[in-house]
Length: 283
Image 1: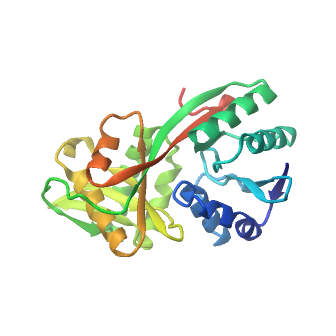
Image 2 (image 1 turned 135 degrees about the vertical axis):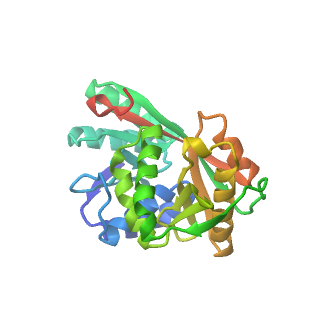
Image 3 (image 1 turned 90 degrees about the horizontal axis):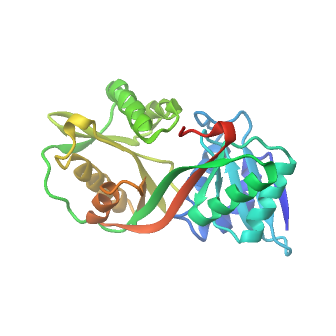
């Protein structure tokens, strides 16, 4: 096996996309990230130059793709164990600066262990997320209000809520900078009961699906069914447009996975983050 580093996002996309599309839902983060790079978009909190790696097997076929183009960690796709070891060998020998690794749970864990062994530096467990997919919506119990698209006038409120969302999940606050762009592209929504009480957005779509994200209800409006109603209504819109709906939630939270399953989401895979050394974000 061998690892190659790419400078050109388009060349990287052309080489790895067929492999990533075999597990499109699981690879939605990486597919969307590469699409943004190809389009020339800046990603808040990203390193100045994205790190794009491809591990090929002995037949020169793609075996593993990895991208570091966001603020949290290098993202991996599912891959054979020997491909993960090869990537860890390459990035440690190249002394690539990695804040951490993120990917399907067992793949991310293998890389973190190998990286730690090669660098003699510790790693810590970060987020444990659960990826869900919906092909239908089971209507939740009715909640007062309705869904509407966010407007530029909503940006200050959405930014505050995005910061609160990131703080609760211990994410970097750079994510809030993305809100205005999403509003301009029609990818932010509010559930309003006379006034806004919950929000949800969508990520950059993959060819056949789109991920619901930034689902947030301020504490004073919780336990009234607003979040379920908001996500169900937005999911219905996505399905009506012909796309599958995806979302991540905190696997360690006993409430949110059950809430999404009740409205029709089904488990795809578990996803884990590991953070490295002084870049650990959960201390």
